[in-house]
Length: 201
Image (cartoon, rainbow, N blue to C red):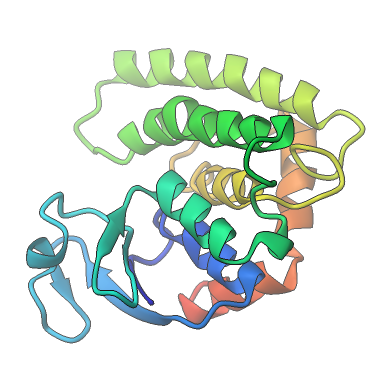
């Protein structure tokens, strides 16, 4: 497999999952400004959307969208526990969390990367994030990770997007539980290895 990624982008989440699962994979960095890969290829020929991540399977098929590829990775190594067994309520809970992170945290925070975002929009986004951060804090009450004691794909995803907050000047000071959670996730060997491979550690 090959993961097309950009440093610090949401592609970090499936990158972490690949390492958690112990799967063999290659990395190819994408310059999102020029849409060129580190090998000089035209990234839009790989993924017409022009954004990361893209996972090239051993068959040559391509998967896009971080939440989907994390489920694919988990199913290649069920014993990793990244996504629980099919048909179980635990699996639906992890999928519920993946969708929540994607639609409520990723997209709201991600919009703030646009330098043209007006102050009014930023206020709306920050208010929306505050309510979502309150929900996450309650979910984490008494838990090491989002679903309890087991690290899942949802944790890889939430860790990744929460990491954007400092760069976007979104303070997490009111939610110390989220900061402590991020620190716990960051300490994992898979996370450290992924951050190092992407030049962020």
